[in-house]
Image 1 (cartoon, rainbow, N blue to C red):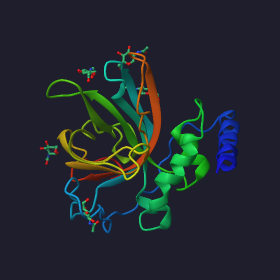
Image 2 (image 1 turned 90 degrees about the horizontal axis):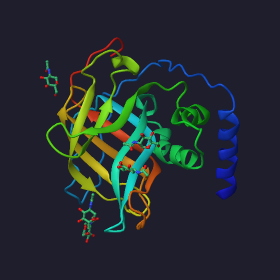
Image 3 (image 1 turned 180 degrees about the vertical axis):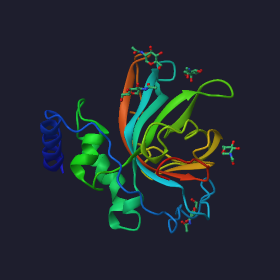
Image 4 (image 1 turned 60 degrees about the horizontal axis):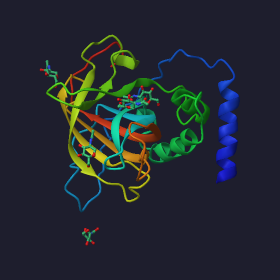
Length: 239
Ligand SMILES: *[C@@H]1O[C@H](CO)[C@@H](O)[C@H](O)[C@H]1NC(C)=O
Ligand SMILES: *[C@@H]1O[C@H](CO)[C@@H](O)[C@H](O)[C@H]1NC(C)=O
Ligand SMILES: *[C@@H]1O[C@H](CO)[C@@H](O)[C@H](O)[C@H]1NC(C)=O
Ligand SMILES: *[C@@H]1O[C@H](CO)[C@@H](O)[C@H](O)[C@H]1NC(C)=O
Ligand SMILES: *[C@@H]1O[C@H](CO)[C@@H](O)[C@H](O)[C@H]1NC(C)=O
């Protein structure tokens, strides 16, 4: 495994030396009418909608943390991820393996390599559409930060100022390997027209070390996940 990841790291480093195309071309998005989210049985945190999702994205990015030296633990300060359309691999074996395959490659990269480089090099989907970006913004209702998914400048919704969602967590299911992988989440949308409900599942990586000691020392931890978007009412040139 170590040799394999080193090979990938070398490939990505080599790739990053070339001028990779920066234009994000649109590939045909595929129908999700038969797609249904499966959640683990025997738990009450995640309730799968019975309807088809509007979008499914593969997210590659980082979870950001700062050290609280009083408790000696890392506290989440945000996340940044690029969201790639997964609709065209739904129903194929690549759909289920993509988050883990992408994580193994993404985790082996160094600073200059972008999520787009990883996705282009892996070629899990030919010419994958970038649906949008994930980040954190000030909580619209009060204190702290809230997760946001922004499709206003990418993909078929580019140019639609309502094609975003700000969410609040309503369900949280830890991974079976919770020292490594961030939790699966069910999120209700509190602002924006992109979706009514969002799920983060198939999580790989993203967890900080158990302990820290220097106040405000900040780290970013790479992760991948699948995001499912339900409901919403966005329109655009290509949807
Ligand atoms: C459901 O969870 C309980 C408590 O964790 C466990 O004892 C039981 O074996 C689980 N059942 C199944 C079918 O996974
Ligand atoms: C840091 O940890 C302490 C002790 O658990 C807690 O009282 C405090 O609110 C935390 N600070 C932040 C910014 O999370
Ligand atoms: C999180 O880290 C990324 C680097 O991976 C950085 O670009 C981004 O600004 C950070 N965001 C926050 C909210 O800290
Ligand atoms: C579209 O969705 C947003 C957010 O869910 C909602 O506030 C708005 O009323 C909806 N518009 C229509 C025309 O359904
Ligand atoms: C670490 O992150 C915190 C919270 O985002 C910020 O207030 C602080 O300035 C950062 N510290 C450094 C050294 O960048």
